[in-house]
Image 1 (cartoon, rainbow, N blue to C red):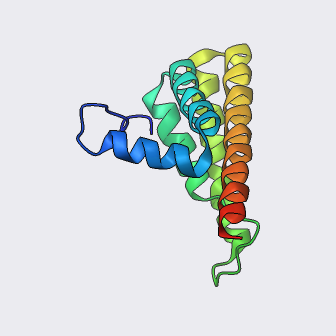
Image 2: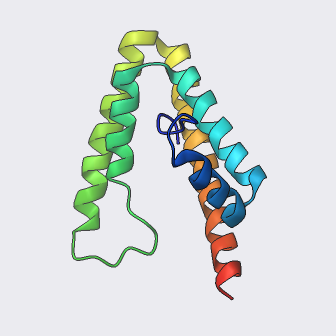
Length: 126
């Protein structure tokens, strides 16, 4: 949604309408607002890249794959430490703490919105 939302694209109004029908206007607006405020708050491409790598190594609680989850968590921990050290080095302890805490808040909020969307999808299938 962040960079792909463009009313000038011919398909976007139809896609946006479909998302509103499926998940409701308020959920779409809340998600859009969440992404934009998070992007404005962080405003650091290196920080965003590191966070995306951390999230890439996140596993779903329903994950039953063949990969060693302990190894995945160790890789995720290394990138989380790298993100923290980057924030600490570039912003100092207080700002790093605030930015890191805010990133965690936004990630958890996004998980909540994702769960709400999943519940709405399941309700429609019944």
